[in-house]
Image 1: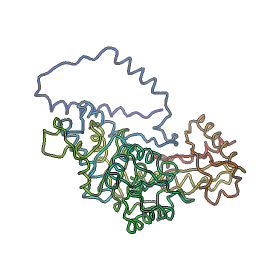
Image 2: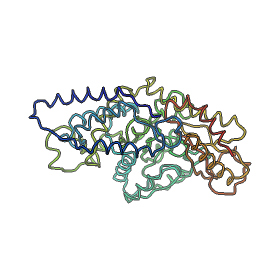
Image 3: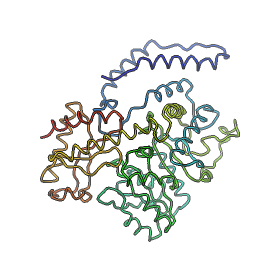
Image 4: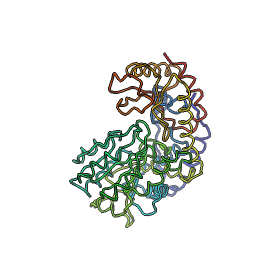
Length: 446
């Protein structure tokens, strides 16, 4: 059953009354509610039941984390105004809230001086980062690991830039030696360092890449769209924690508040360490930027119209959950990693299963142990389907066999890719549900 807090509507009604009071000086007018609205909304409610239960802890598959109630309420409240954060004329209050919220995100990464704003997605935020990279080094390549998000190669194609894939090691992170071999050729202008790949959650070796930057003078862009908030986790391994501790040394960072930041979809964030990067965005818009001498967010972004409600939801959430070490938000992020480690320990303690590697953040990859790769793939698909019938929703991952670690060496490699089970344990509640998840997994075996 979906948990629904009736108190939410009471709070929203109070907030709407207060919002309306700010416009009480205007002449009244009446808007009619069509009689069909109720019927249509009930139809919507019925049709929306045709979804996986993303909100429930037994949904432990893809990267789908429900927004917090404060984000939902603040977003809905803002929609009575429907502000546009392109220009101050379209959203004065929401633009100010965006600037404050983005400043708090930048501070989380150790930046007080920066240029940044929200975007409609992590994909668009990464596009802006690579667009600036291309302006700085127009004839040089973008490099990223073979496990980096596929959008980096596609974005590079859109921007007319060449993309260089760098091989990964057996731990799923970029091979710094292979990277250096490419850097020696002098054709790479920017390296995309992934802070939590969306496939297996691996974190690229930022300390080693920073050392290479001293020798070869390239830009470092951190794609932290998924894993960026683990900067606040208190229980990462020493190796992973050292990577996160150096994020402030990068040239640009992308993080997605609509992933671990508890926001509805439509909320990404791009940050540049050097505020002078704003010069690349400079453009004229004679009918949108006339109302104020203050900075209009459209002057430092590629997007035009953009939902101000997304900024309002983020601002409210960060007021409830400040982005500080040891706070509630930090503890919840740590809980996600704890859940992943707890599930990993169950996998490694059961001789019937085999894991890919210890999770660096909150993504766990594993499979039922078989004699061949093809048999493992078949078993993974069977468990996936049987578990779903028992209301446990996992995900599947096709992983290159050549990157499998040592514990897989005795398995016959009869195919190039192996299909594994995959879980993103994004919800803080997952730490209390690992036993139930594991029970259903084992009941779903062949």
